[in-house]
Length: 397
Image (cartoon, rainbow, N blue to C red; front, side, top):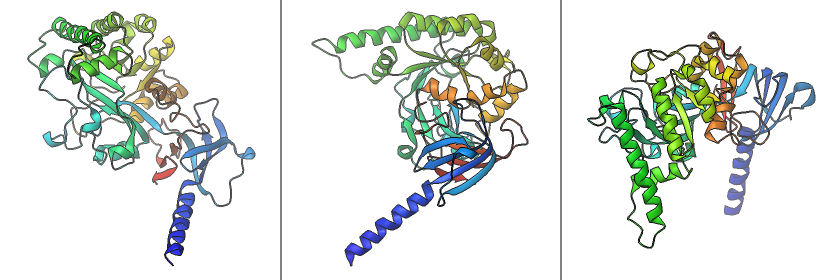
């Protein structure tokens, strides 16, 4: 009798899993981001992966598949840089973990230790089509901490986790001096960072010696930047700060992502020559302070210059604490960015920059079944999201 119960339980679980995980999406237009859009297409999902994508006249939908229909289907959106999960919706001290102000240089801080998968802002961006978010310690410190990548529908960080340590977030803006006693000026800030990187170089050498030093979490984090295990994500908006970031990269030879870049249009040639990607500031960023000269046309200019870039929600100091990358991309298209380039900067481009393009970012056989279904053009403000699918499961209807 006990064996029958076990077998029945296994059968019911298997049947439920199969029913839940096998589905089809029919759409008038499918943007796979792996080639031309497909008109009148079908996506088949088996378990948590995409099984096949193509024109409807070439694909038969199995009889037991759950079918979802939409005007447009795209890959799940990837927010290139956010603080959701560390910054909370209430804008109160108890839900604001994105910036530790006890020291201006703390690369050892880990987002995974603060990320709240149940935070309402995470659910909010999921409902707006963001299925993967690169989040963590935000701008405002010379080195504020490490970032992580998470899927948005899950209730614990362990379930959500895609990558536990992705970048170390650095900031070269005037805002740093407002949060800390030191540095007071840009040159002091750079001197402090350079000194720490020099110490990290020495730490690496000493670790290989016969008398290695005691573990130092700050040095370990910076050593990982120097040896390429972690990328330096440097927030810089003014042209002078962008150039300073490029000099720092050149001096120490680390991998770098330029973040923010409000005045990128003034130094496009230099950014392109440095061969670095950009997490562009939100198109509708408030234009004051370091972002005073931000432009609606920056995304189009980066595209025209052939510089890889992706849209981010960024850091918001006001309630509700986050922007929505879909809206930021939609505005950018009104100022010269081609529509498919905008979709690319919401999906495939951020996945490539973050090194997770084998999992997400496009609709391709074998990739995670993260799909957003729209009732119209995704970049039109009158369009609604009908459904969101993550890892083959419908998480928003």
